[in-house]
Length: 233
View 1 (cartoon, rainbow, N blue to C red):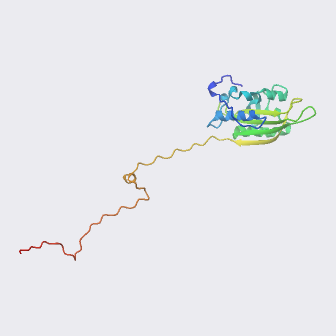
View 2: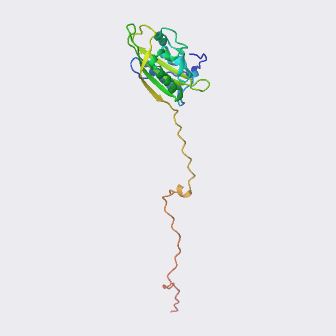
View 3: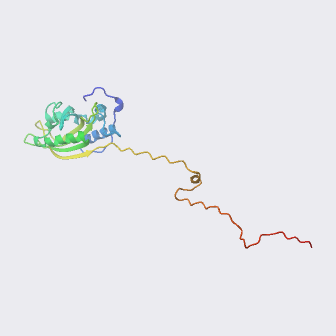
């Protein structure tokens, strides 16, 4: 990688994942990226440690967005060099793509960096008598640079089949773009007001019955009061 200061405490081991047969490195790199970002929108480029994706390292690369729709390969595993038959560092990502599909790749790079989004591409290599059929998949994941802008991309590319005569370039036959967002923060419930004496006694506002007013009772005027009767007998 293009950073020499690696922090061993940022290594995230991802050993349990399900993947399509032959493309397990794609799933491993995505799981590693997801583990690094946690509750954030995306991880930083400086957090990527090769030891966290050691078994997928030959298929992994890092891009730098240098202009709208343009990205160059900063570092790449041996698989990409094998497909091109040369060292690919410093080359644009579009050097791996056939000319008719390069505009689509430019649009994908903008989606990944500006939306931001995760993109997965399905590709087929152009064929000839010396270039047998190849199926390929590419994964692109956004990263923040040390300056805080989204100008780095963690990628993984796997081509299945015999490489044949190089360089091999690929047509894009399908793309799946998934916008990403940081998890929403759920606001804490408001604190309840202190209970009144009635509430503590079991009354509930809005449901308690009104207290009856006190009424005094006056004896009926037509009924004589009791009186003392004197009896001299």
